[in-house]
Amino acid sequence: MTAHTPRRHRGWFWTLLTVAILIVYLFPVYWMLSASLQPGANSTDTEWFPSNAALDGYADAFENGGLEGLRVSLVTAFGSVLLTLVVAVPAAYSLSRLRSRAVSLGLVLLLLAQMIPSIVLANSFYAMFNTWGVLNSYVGLILANSTAGIPFAIILLRSFMLRLDTEVIEAATLDGLGPLGALRRIVVPLSRNAIITAGVFTFLFSWGDLLFGLTLVTKTDMYPVTVFIYALANSNLNTWAATMAASLIASLPALVLVLAAQRYVKEGVITGSGR
Image 1 (spheres, rainbow, N blue to C red):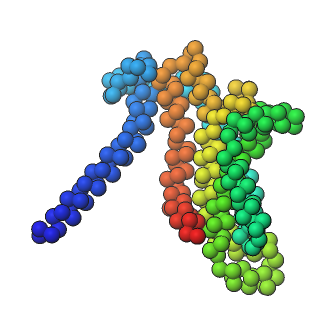
Image 2 (cartoon, rainbow, N blue to C red):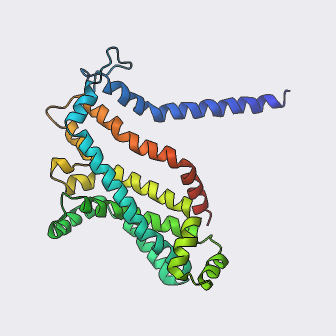
Image 3 (cartoon, one colour):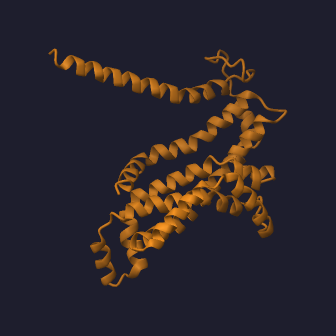
C-alpha cells in the first residue's frame, strides 16, 4: 500500500499539470467566445463572463464579408492541398527510390527553400504574378501558398516511403504495372497516413496565411479570411465583438479538420519520423 502511494501521487501530479496546460492553451478560445458575445465591449474592458450575451458580433462579421472570406480561404486551402500532393507524392517517391548524392543535395535545397522569409517570396510573387495576370485570383493564392506545403510534404513523404517494402513494389512492376501504376496502386494506398498528414499541414499553412493574402490581393471580394479579420480589426466600423466572432468562425474549419484527421496525422508523423 505504501509503495503505491508515491506512484499514485505522481499520477495525480501529471494529471493536474496536463489539465493546467490544457486550460492555458484553450483560454484564448474561451476569451474569443466571451468577447464575441459582448457587442459593447472593446479590447480593454471585455468581461470574463458575458452578462448580456448577444449575437450582434456574428451578424456584423457575416454582413461585412465573413462568408466571402471563408469561401476564398476554403478554395485556396483545398486547392493548395491538391497541388501540393500532385507534385509532392511522385517527387517523394522518386527521391525515395534513387540512391545518389544528388538526392541529398535536393533535400538540402528543399530545406533551404523553407527557410526563405515569406516577405521575400511575397514581393517576388507580386512582380511575377502581375506579369502573368493572376493577382487577385485563386490561381495566384494557390501557387503562393503551395510553396510552403510542397517542400514539407516531399520531405515527410520521402521519409515514409523509404520504409516501404521494396520487394512488393518490384513485384508489382514485374507484373506489368510500370512505375506510375505501382505508384498509384501500391505506394499511394500504403502511404495513406503520410499523405493525409501532408495534406492536413498544407491546409493549415494555407489557412493561416496572412502575408500572401495581403500582398497578392487588393480586391475585397477576394480577401482570404485572415485578411478579412485584419481589415475588420483596422476598420472604422469595427467592433471588438465582430473581430472576435470572425476569429472564432475562422478557427472552426481548421479545428474540425484536425479533429477528423488526428488519428491519421498521429500515425503518419510517427511512421514518417521512424527513419
